[in-house]
Length: 333
Ligand code: CP
Image (cartoon, rainbow, N blue to C red; front, side):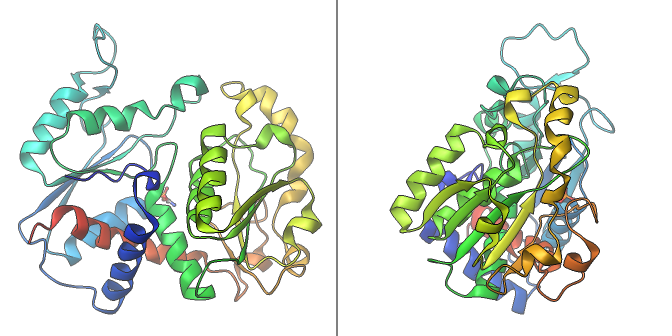
């Protein structure tokens, strides 16, 4: 049995096989290979794309997806071991995972970090607890990484650039009114370095470096794949010659859990918004973002409406890559 918790557990060849399968499913979207199978989707946080693409993808393959929102229309869950459960949670992940493993052929989980203590959240304990107690494959629908988004992004890169090796990939931090999860930025770094790209991470200052576990993994992967990873605070240098620009906002980890202090650090950097002038510095780059995106905060209308913006392609790819993933994890035939 295989989980899909992070792409760090999967080789480039295995991920490419999923991307190739996604391409085939794009051309022939409907079959019954998962007829009679079921998938539980646990959402601890909101979603538009992840929920709809998993539900629709399961339907396309003949499977049924059950969406559960613990703490809302389902019982709240305790994820820590050995806790005296006299708080809000009504049941423990041991029973939740055990029950759903009896009903379902896979379980997806979205559990954003709690924005209190990064030394705890960086361990990704919630999804690891689910995986430890489940006897069916577990799929990460975004925790401190977003591996399904990684697949969708790399499908878009390959569709638009062909072979990714040696192409310049810019991961640019952008402004947002509040500090956001680092998951998509971590993931963009992981997938681009795994696939041999020359990655430049553009940040306004050192406080916006990603967690060292991901910086180190990116360095390791780049070395193995023949790519590279560098960090820049120079907007012109970063955009210059870029083949693919990927934007994301995230909170500064040294200020994790202290949003008011972080807001003051972030305030001078609204100009990191992606605009036409910055894109003009590139090598006719494509632009993308995982969505949702606040227009004229993270990227201008001009960028979002340009032919080079492939954010909708990436969003569509969520459907294709997750179908490939469900077939890989749930189809025993
Ligand atoms: N990109 C993404 O995961 O979108 P949702 O938050 O809408 O699922």
